Structure formats: structure tokens, C-alpha cells
Image 1 (cartoon, rainbow, N blue to C red):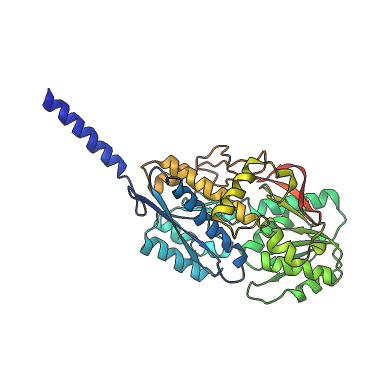
Image 2 (image 1 turned 120 degrees about the vertical axis):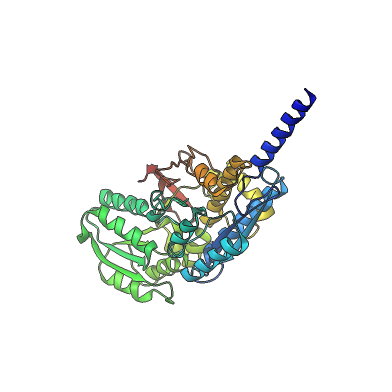
Length: 396
């Protein structure tokens, strides 16, 4: 009987050990390694703080004991907003550093450069800070998932609002000449259902120095509405230039460039007053959230671990929500830290309430729908703060 009991106990220990060792490269009994690739340099360097934020968040997690007893190591790499560099850095992380997954990357053209690679390698490419509609394609790309709302859906929200509130307007559009810009543009124009409302649409390349000539073209078109589809550096230039040349319009600004400190302040708050944009997050600078628990937790994290973070840059608190969601999935994974299990968990979130999301907005995914956040609210800049108006709008 003693031998039988001993054998049973040994069998349970061995079975437990086998289960605990269910890891893919990048995970062990002591550590979880993942990477993030952001533009720490180059034309979109304003976004680079997201990588610093994610790394800082897991410094906080590690100080609290890690995840299921494991230290989380985050490797932050710079791609300079260059697609070729993004591919180089992804290969570095996957093949040389051996990370378990890559998460929180910035940029549509850059992530496009590694879209096929990550899926061929079957390494999770998670919670991207880009709203291109292509990321929500679980059938063709089952290892890639976005985090922020879709650019196309946001573009449709603006078009609907313009049609309902200013149907006789003429629209001038500035857009970035890549997948990011065209995703917004195509959906916006399609939703208008009347291309004659577009007085002019002009593009710019991220390698250009200024967009002064484009803004002159748009003003000369006679447009009385300006749709600014630009990344932060160029969005700020466009807002300032519109004011300098006296182009008095109703302005719409894409959400990825509506940061107060990185865009509106450099452009000039007087020029930015009245701009309409969208949001899915609580604004830490908004007096309405002075007593909000999420904002209080963000401010505590910021002051202790992320002092360079800004209350005026939405991506600095969006990445806080992203990192929280990554932590949740890793915690739920327990000792099964495999590529397949991470994607299973990421694609089965139901009404998950990440911090900083607006009331009425939660994260929901399924194996057939990889878009986590599908609601936003319109807001207007009053010269000091953004003010939400209307109801939360479900996007599709």
C-alpha cells in the first residue's frame, strides 16, 4: 500500500511538473519576455513614449511580485517609423531575443511590414496602437490583433456628423499618403455618399518637411470644413498653418493626433479651439475626472514609474490600458504560456473593463472578431480642455 501511495504521489508531482513546463520560447518558471516596437526617433517620435509606458507599467508589476511569481521583461525597440526598421527589430525580438510575443507596436505602415512575418512565425502580434481595418482579420491573420478603435469606423462617424449637421458644406482633406491616411479617407468619402462634397483632398509624405503648400491648396479650394488626417507632427503644422493663413473652417481631427500637449499646444491653443475629434478614453486633465479612480491610479503610476508621461497625450494613457490588458491575459494564462493559449485568451475577452476607458465602453473580442474597442464619443476642444458631447457611438 505504501509503494502504491508513493507511486501515486510521484505521478502527481511529475504530472504537475509537466503542466508547469508548458512554455513557448520567451517564458520560463522565472520570467516572461515580450517586446514592443515604437518610433523613439523619426517623424512619429511623439508616439515613442508608449514603449516607455509599457515597460514602466511592468516595472510596477514586478515591484508588486510579478505575474504568477514570474518577472516580466519588456524589450523596447526603436523603428524610427520606418517599415524596414520595424521588420529588422521584429526579427531581432523573435529570432535573437526569443520573446514570447510582441505587443503595443505603433503605426500602420510599420506594422504592415511585419504582418505576414509574425503570422508565418505564429508569434502573437498583439494590441497594436493602430486602427487600420486590416488588423481585424482573424481568418487570414490569426496572430495579429489591434487595440484602438478602427480608423475606418472613426472616419464614418465624422462623415455622418457632417451630413447630419452641415449637409451643404464643402470639405477639404489633408491625409497621410500611406495605409493610415487612406483607411480614414476611403471610409469617410464612402460614408458621405456624395463625392461632390469634397472640394479637395491632398496628401503628404512623412519624409516631407512641411505641409504649407498643401494647406494653401485646401484653402484655395473654397472648403469650409477641414478634415485633418495626420500624425502628430503634421497635424500640429496643419492646425497652425490654417490659423496663420486665415482659413476659417470647422475642423475635424483624427483621434490619433488629438493630444493636447503633443499637438494642440505646439499648434497654438487659440488655433485649436473648436476642433472636433473622437475619444474612447478618460482625459486626465478634464476636471470631470478629478475624483475618478482610474485617473487617480494613472496619476500614481505616472508619478512613480513614468514621470515623463503626459496627461495631455492620449497614447500615454492608452498604453496604460493596453499594458493592463496584457497583464490580465498573462495572469489568466497561468502556467500555460504558449503562443496558442495567449491568442485564445486575447480573442475571448467579454466586456473586459480596462482602466481609463469611458463609461459604456469595454473590451470584447471573439475568435471571429479581433476588434477590442468598438465605441467612441465625439468631443470638441474649448481652448483649454476637450469636452464630450452626445452619446457614446458604437462603431463597426
